[in-house]
Length: 107
Image (cartoon, rainbow, N blue to C red; front, side, top):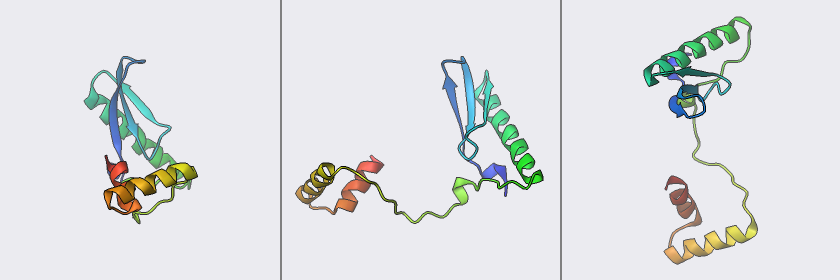
C-alpha cells in the first residue's frame, strides 16, 4: 500500500492565513504552509510518517479511497413527504426515482 494513492487536498485557511494540506483517509492530519505546493508536500510527508508508525505498531492502515470497490448503491433515509414529492417529480419528468435522485446528487 502506498500513501501516494491517498486523496490529498490543499485549501486556503482564512483563520490561519495559510494553505492547509489535508488527507481524506487520515482526517486527523493537516499541514499548514505559506504556499500550496508546500502544504501538499507537508501533508504527504506527515501521512507517510503516520502510516509507517501504524504499520510498526501493528495498527490497521486506511485503504486509499481510490483503491476501494464501490457498488454504486447506498441507502438514504428521508421523510415520507420528501419521498412522495420526489416520486411525483420523477413521474412528471418521465424518469425513474433512481434516475432523478442520481441526477440531483450529480448536479
